[in-house]
Length: 452
Image 1 (cartoon, rainbow, N blue to C red):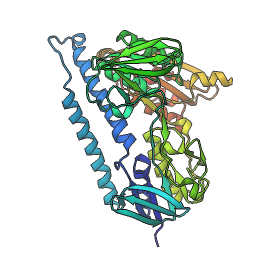
Image 2: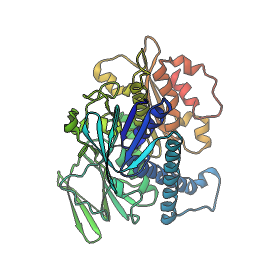
Image 3: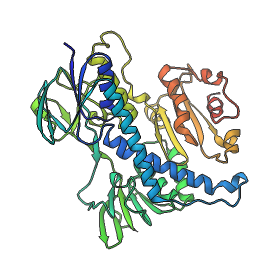
Image 4: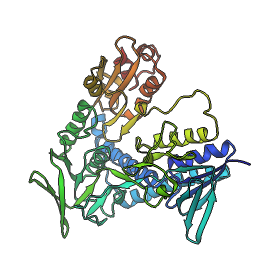
């Protein structure tokens, strides 16, 4: 009899686990209450990147005179953008559903919950159905965090999920939160021509990132006319007709037509029956080991619910590894997920990407490192494309030359970081990058230059 694999949540972790487990011979049931493909992925990540791409196209067209092209201009058709986002979402959703169907995965629309260590109930529109399971995966994702002082109405005061896209284009958007999501919103709406104010609770945007990287982004925001309220923590929001005022703890206020909160997320763990099954949690997140296995044998957790890196790429890899582990493929030595080697990107302009050991963390721990940096202003392709902003920074071990990490600020950073990510994961040396015969002219040449 094939293993019965029941998955609650069909985001990147859930659908990857379903696909791999089915290929390995499991009988797979996938329970999803919102959208197969993942609400956070298809309703947050993909729409935001589509909006950013549109803003980037606008900026590129309007900067065409710098490349010798005259008499060009572009404007935003907000309804067309909305239709474009919907079409992309549907195409991706259909692709995921088609793949799952081709693997024989049964999809149940409804809310899943545990009623025991091997029992799952799906509450659907027509009633409830109980499933016996040998393996259970919990991958229910997360939702925007909303503090008590924020009167979210979806009209003037928005969460991130209300803004992909919002019902109307803001005249002046006040963004609360300067992490990855917050700065992407600043870039996105400023590229659409909106006035933007960013409330920054620390003394730099992207407080968890390299200060040099953050400074490059701050410089670009200021160049675009973005107002930065540094060292200000939002404590209240007042709405008066078509005006929104954000109050800060230092007495400053920021007024605009709309306010948007980008201050993190909380796991969707309520109503899952975790206590009934004896699953240990910490702050709402399911506690997992290196195999994403919870405190209860046979019950796994992945994606945002696992409390690890909240990245779609990480969730998808967790799903794959869980399927392999549950189906017995990891009985012998194998490579575990190393979250410290996960590449991440921020889709601003210029783009920002990093992987592995950060320079500040190395210095804080007293670890000896070699840091080399090359600006894109010295790169032929960057000059050809009329965008020489940013740099490549590579961190390596001075004794062995092994690549430990790196940061990229500039055009196509999210693509270029893959080279450094591969080097970090595979334990390659800087000489391996230097001695690669790369294309000329290409932005990637800056990687080899930084590795020298």
